[in-house]
Length: 249
Length: 292
Image (cartoon, rainbow over the protein chains, first blue to last red):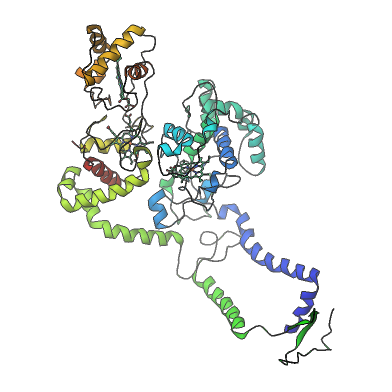
């Protein structure tokens, strides 16, 4: 019987079928249970979809390849928790498409960078990182200062994300452009309450780049950086929480 | 060239059967897999079965069970492992931490061992959290104050430093330190120049006009004080010492601050860092040389 492998080796179709079967066993066992998302994502309060401005920031983050140097995942290891704060929860990246966990850390992890610095600092640091960290090898992104954030089709972007399960409502999609302007304080301030109503109270409404008149790419990327890791209500989090009892909100 | 099992080819040198293929006169021996390799393969399978039993391994389709899967015999989780390794550090620090909680910062600073513990801890926390703005040697940069000198915006006593770090400056924290220098845009250019000249005179001893001084006393004295010594309860800078946070060391620099005042923002660390770490940081910053 052990000599029969020559049959498989000499018949490429048969070989292919056997390879597919072998891989599927491992794959199915690992992947299928994960589709039952409620068993793998901890119930934790506070997680909301990104606002349109933050989403525009994430697009820039991906376009510029920031993930090539920065991870967004604090692993439950002592040294990482000491340095970056509470380990990341699956729920915190459940609306990231694509997720930004990464594994390359030329620069520090950014999963909880929100609130660590002021907007002003981010502006200065994006334009010239070496001004603050002389030995930094992070490149300058000064072009973002003068480029408008791409908000024309941001509503369509929300609608697309809705297709893959991000709970954007119709009114969020409809008002996406205005919400982005409002968050960067370039719209009218009366619409702030509508923004809060749609996305909840935990939103930074500021003129992130400190410049009036336009919503620049800096506004968008800083809005995104400033929300990273700040949504989850970590005080309530208990790793032994029984997954079956509650579902994420 | 497909060979049947029936017509075997035996290699004449080794006496071992070949696969029957031939490439440019080279044949391949059909040796069985080495024994050690086969055994290793079996051992890994047995190992896996043991592993499933001991560790959390199999997800359940229904999502029942511990975190949606089998729990494993020894109840191991990554979270427990983390907790254990953190507890190990905490117990090493326990004695010092307990003293930290019990005593006021002033008492901690009088105690040589605790003081050394605080400075060491504060130094490493500073590198990770503060160096980006204040520089790794705490020497600051434009807009970010030097913490080595004895020029303080919000006061250099240990208590004040502690409060500044904990609640931040101009943040969302309800107890944040905050104050705003009003913009005096629209003022006559002549007046602007005279006030600026008076302000510069405070540190340089240059000449100024009586009008400049009067205007200063009307508009700026309330915050920046007599002779520009500043007011830490308002975070109003000392403007008589040539140490500038935001402005150029020149008359036009002062004018621009009067017309378009700049304000620094420093994040609040309450919630991000625990109280013991904030105390350590306060003691470290205080020990840098400028503490009052």
